[in-house]
Each structure stands twice: as C-alpha cells, then as structure tokens.
Image (tube, rainbow, N blue to C red; front, top):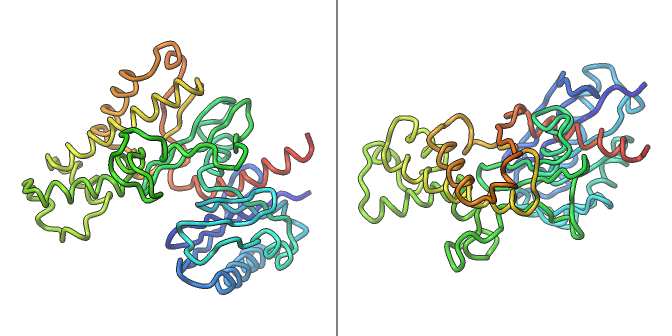
Length: 323
C-alpha cells in the first residue's frame, strides 16, 4: 500500500520538500534556495535531485509514493499542471511543471495555488477538519485565501476564486502590487503595514523603536516586534490594518456565510492588539445573521501549513479520482 507523499512548498526565497505519511506526519524535510531570478530548468533539476535524496534516505522507491504535491504562489492551471505566472519565480511563466516532474520522478504530480493548498491542508489536518464550509486566509507579505464549500475546494471558472487580497476596500486608494488601487492587500498585508510606517516616519512621526532601523529596511515583521514592545506608531498602524482586514472579512461573511474563518500568516499570529480590532471591525460590518454561526480562529498548522498543504493536495486529488 502507498503510504507516503512528497510535499513541495515553493516560496519566495526557498523551496521546502517534505516526506510525509497519508495521516499528515512529516518525517523528513530538505530545503533549497528557490533563486527567484534563476532559470526554471536549473531549479527544477535541483528539486528533482532533492526529492530523490528524500526517498533514498528512507529506502523508498517511486512505487511507494502516492504522489507529489506542490503548493505554488501565483496563477496555476491545475488541470494541466502549468505554472502560468508566479510572483516568487520571476522567470517561471507557462512552465509545464507537472509534465516535467512526473517524467523525471516517475510519480504522479499535482500542483495547486499555495493559498488553496493551505485551505485543503487545514481541511485534512488542521482547524478545518470536519468543517465543510470555511475560508482559510493567510496574512503575511501579501493576502491570500482558499475557499472550502460543501467539503470541496472552490477554484472558480479561471482558477482565481479566493483572491481576498484584491477586493476593493478603498476606491481609488493606495496602489497594490497587482496594479489596481484600493485593494485590501494594499492596506492590511505585512508589506502594506511596513509602507504605512515608512510614510508616517517621513511625515515626522516619532518612534524610538524605528529610529534604530534604516527607513528603507523596515519590514512588516519589524512593525510586529515594535508593537509587541509597545511602540505607539507600530500599534497604531497595525490597528488600522486590522480594521481594514475586518472589513474585508465582513464582506466574505456576508457573501459566503462560512461556518469558520481560519487565519494564518505572520501578521495575525499571537498579537492581540491586531486580533481584537480586526474582530471589532468584522462585527461592526458583517450582517449579524451571517456572522452568528461563524467561528473565527487561528490556524492550528502554523508554519507547517505549506508542507501539510502540499501533502493534502495529493490526498484530495486521489480522493476525488475515486468519487
């Protein structure tokens, strides 16, 4: 019986290849640089070699593997297994990754958008287990989400369902990296939070904490740490971002009426001064009847969501093929 799965989480700076069981137990992991500007052939060759080493360490062969699952940020043709465009991999456009990997590794390969993969991972192993209607939202450098309805991942006609980061919260507002204006991602993501602090400092805002950091090097993580240390500017900026996120989530609650919203990513982890303003805005803006039975919770998978999401992509695909 095939009890093993290879999961590959393709990030902006690194690619993590994990070996796991069908029950979601991660037993081995190797990490390599994704070298975002490198040619795809170079990185794919290294990735294939990394997967082979993972298997060799456990004395496993391709026939022992249920499949290889990949979680990749960007636009994915999941049916054909083609990376259409990825913000993390600048030179990876229209790459038939499924065909390349399956031929090289001699194993079934399944590819999914990273936020969708995370939602499937939560459904299989995390806070969404046993819940058939929920939204997974990741708030980190950007904002992404995956929708599970009736126990099934919702991709939409073009595979772009769940682009929560690109709903408009301020018409004509801040420019988003997508080229549009006023997107939620331009107000509530880690990148947006860092930009808001920089703007405030340029306008003369005072902060002992940020005075120790070069202006052009301030990150969303720096703002989180500043807020934890009580820096007033950091707290104020994060609370404003939390309010915008609450508005965005209220729109989703009104539209989809989910049973649960699962939040993950560095921006929303642990820090109460972000969590409470977000919930306050959500309750203020959402239709009470739609919100009444909706539970808001943090991801149980935490930093493992990418690895386990990639494993879950294989389980979901294999399960669907038998239904």
